[in-house]
Structure formats: C-alpha cells, structure tokens
Length: 238
Ligand code: SAH
Image (tube, rainbow, N blue to C red):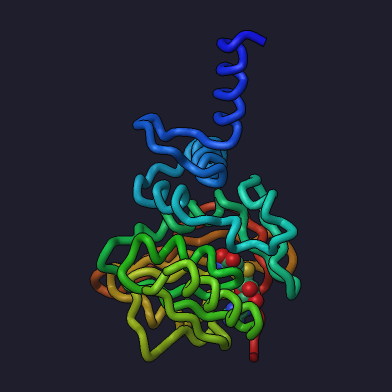
C-alpha cells in the first residue's frame, strides 16, 4: 500500500467519526446528526427562526430518549419514553417553538414535561421555563436530566397542568404538549397581554388541530389553526 493511499484511508476513517464545522472546529457525531436533522427535517419544512434552529442544533436530543433508542434520536418521528408517553418528532418541537416567538426576556410555561426535551429547547430561548408533568417518575427523571445537562433556568413540577402554574403566572409563552378536548381556561387566564399559547386540541387518540392562540394588548384572544397533529391526551387528576 502506498503511503499516499494509507494517508487517504486514514483521513477517510477520521472523517467518518468526526466532522468539522467549516471553520475547522471538530464536531462530535451527534452534532453532525443534529445539523442534518435541522437541515433536512426542519428548515426543509419551512421553520426559519434562527434562534430556534440554533437551539435545535445545540440540545443533545439523544440524552432525552431511553438508551435503547439513542440511535433513533435524530430520526424524523416521535419516540417512546415509557409510561405510554412519547417525545415529539423534532419538526413538531421546532414548529411549536417557532409559533410562540420566544424572546430572551420571556417567561415560559410548558404543560407535559415528558423527557424534558421541549423544556430544554425553550430554556435556550427565554429567561425562565416552568414545566408541569402529571406522571411522577417522568417528571422526576426529567428534572434530574435537565439538572445534569446544565439547564438551570427550568423548574419542574409534578401535577395536573390543566390548572397552569398560578404562582409563577403570567407567562409570555405557553406550550402544551398533550392534547385536551378544549383549551383550559386557566391557561388562557395565565397568558400575558401580548402572550402566545400553542396547543393541540381535539378528541382523545384521534387527529387534533394545532392552534396558536394570542392575547392582544387589550386582552382579546385571536386563534389560528396551524396543522393537524397527533399528541397523547391531556389527562386529568393526578
Ligand atoms: N414535551 C415532552 C413530550 C410530551 S408527551 C418532551 O419534550 O419530551 C406529553 C406529556 O404530557 C406526557 O409525559 C404526559 O404524561 C404529560 N401529561 C398528560 N396530561 C398531563 C397533565 N394534565 N398535566 C401535565 N402533564 C400531562
């Protein structure tokens, strides 16, 4: 084997394990997968907000899925996280995040913590995130995961998110990631004038509609239906 050939092979092998970001910095394999996920699944479908795209490139989604599913973390579909619950498809997370137009000084509420992934994305874009999960082991795991990964501006509570989080209200942004059959009035009440609420609404285990609800400066509500979606139901009680 010629030395030139050997050198070419070793360069190719190195390229298979690492890639550079074009400015010469070495990136790890998951970062390369995330960049591809953002380009092919998210930008290709029309998400444009540069801060949202950057957060989707940064947050290590593979750390939010069960170890057995890590290799699927960056694929174009939802994944099971146990207890009959799912982490949404990357595109849906990006779309919902873009719809609520998160600003750096905003306070955000999420209903349905699940793995903590959506909360981690929001935490990169706003000043504080409050998130509520009804399944206690999921809430506790997500809290631990968010702390371990350094998302220190997220507070997790175990309980029924239908009632929102009155002590931390009002919110600029509310993201609901489980589907009720109607918009919970407490969430509308806890939205600031100028605030944005994104929520899937519809019957249990059927297609729901994703709605963007905005409260204007005068307190009037404006609703737009964005897309058909399929979320797990918003449960009551707990
Ligand atoms: N946002 C999550 C995925 C959410 S799946 C993520 O990024 O991983 C929907 C979650 O909503 C599930 O974990 C489910 O247990 C939770 N949930 C359902 N009803 C709820 C309620 N009333 N209050 C809070 N969480 C609820």
